[in-house]
Length: 401
Figure 1 (cartoon, rainbow, N blue to C red):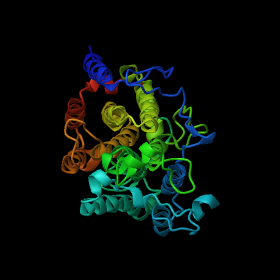
Figure 2 (cartoon, rainbow, N blue to C red; figure 1 turned 60 degrees about the horizontal axis):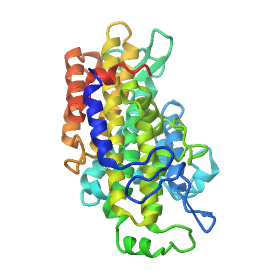
Figure 3 (cartoon, rainbow, N blue to C red; figure 1 turned 45 degrees about the vertical axis):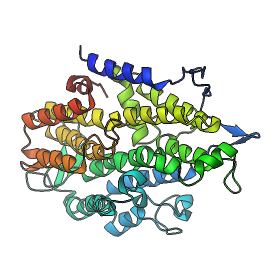
């Protein structure tokens, strides 16, 4: 029974999607998707998303630095807001890049181009997690954490976690927050948005086969590929992704899809990306837009399912293993934060607004943080999220990973 709501949700969407089977067969709209994400023109690949790969790699190093108590705030801040040719990373190519992670956090055209005040507030929240880690947690690396005091707390397995005075791991809030604030926001609310795909003369140029100067792709093709890159850009072979190649959206799409209650989610996403890209090349924009709706729906599920999973995992460990509970709840914190960047096709906005997310986080942390959070609160938050997305708390909670 726990699968019923989700199954109806998925089946209904699939009937509307006109997506291809895995073999790339005809979908009834005269667009055939390839078996893999390979697109060429005159023998040359038309797929390019190097900037997205760069930012994923930068984000990986930033999260690593947040777990190294020898890092300074100046160092991590510089990594986050990287300037071209600054010696911020271990990889010389990253140092030479003019890209940065911070510049693309809460920076989508659809959500933030006319809302720079909120964009800056969100960037400042990421800054505060860096500051909190360096100035509160690092100085107490060798202390034992207790209510109201930052420090180390050990799981029954022996793993040590480092938390602030409320029990929160800032590095987890930062990493999971990036899944929404960088990856999901850029995919769903920027590159797959009509304002970006159809900007200026993009549609006319795509129809006429006008390529970007010195490139093998049209602007619209490239924008779609950049969305693809924020999910698959760390893969050894992005054309045939295996998932789990980074610790961000790739890893957690993989984990959600491994839950039998959400089986096939990864395939839905991959097939929609392939078919949408093929539709662009064929100038079939109705098919393209149908795939955008699928991607919004499926990708938005990832932070929702994992937020509920970690809320329930934390609840189940609160008494027996506080350190494990705090670790799970720190991940839940970041995934809840990411909900404000999801995209609901019914409203054309997030499933949860920033105010709603801020309210949920206040509830989560309101009683001396994780030290005093109740099972009732964790259940209520779980049920609020699962109900909004149309799956059951039980379905999300029983995953084994």
